[in-house]
Length: 302
Image: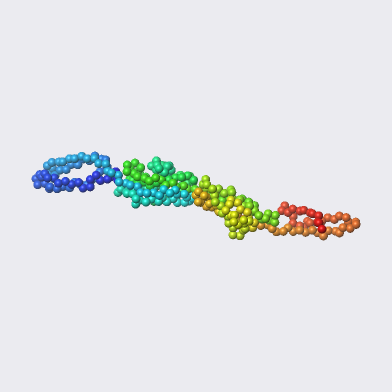
């Protein structure tokens, strides 16, 4: 484009003067001249009879015209791949232009002054935890111009450089699912509330919840899209969560067991009450015992 364009593509002249039957037509060689340089052109015949000299200076016109970049924000999970959608057919490349996609930290409308994180020629980028933060918005812009021979990127000092605005791209952490609640159903505990409110979003937004089970049971089967749910059957329960901003998902399972084995109750046959034996001991020592059992004697009502 501007730096190495051709000043003249085929200057030729017919010299009407002759000297010792000189060839009346000579061609002037083609030379590549940097734009903006001063040029002095001297022309003489083969007999060096006389010399014509002229000077000129020319600034080449920039013809580089950048294409169109889709500026729809790109929202990804932490392991997602960003792909910038650029249409180069709507622009124009000069002969020595290169196209580079640049991932940078800065402002969408000022890619030139952004902090470069990475660049390539295909517009595909992944999250780099050594240089970036999850949840922060970065930008991808397309640049067109002369190549920087040192970095391989576009030369930001090129006077004819062109660039698009930056398309926003944000990588988010995956949400973290959590379930709290008792894990054992019993004769006394007929149902359990499972609580998913401790789950964490990967963004500043909220979460969508979905509970499911294959072998368990819900007290209210139609109400499984809240942060809590009531269950009444042993089995494995799954909580799936979705980040409302990023769309990233995660899930966790929770197993409920059941202890409904009836305790052993055994009372030894007591002595008979008589006029002489007015009280006897009741022996239930062969019944189930331990911290999981409560013993209560009651007077029978007939």
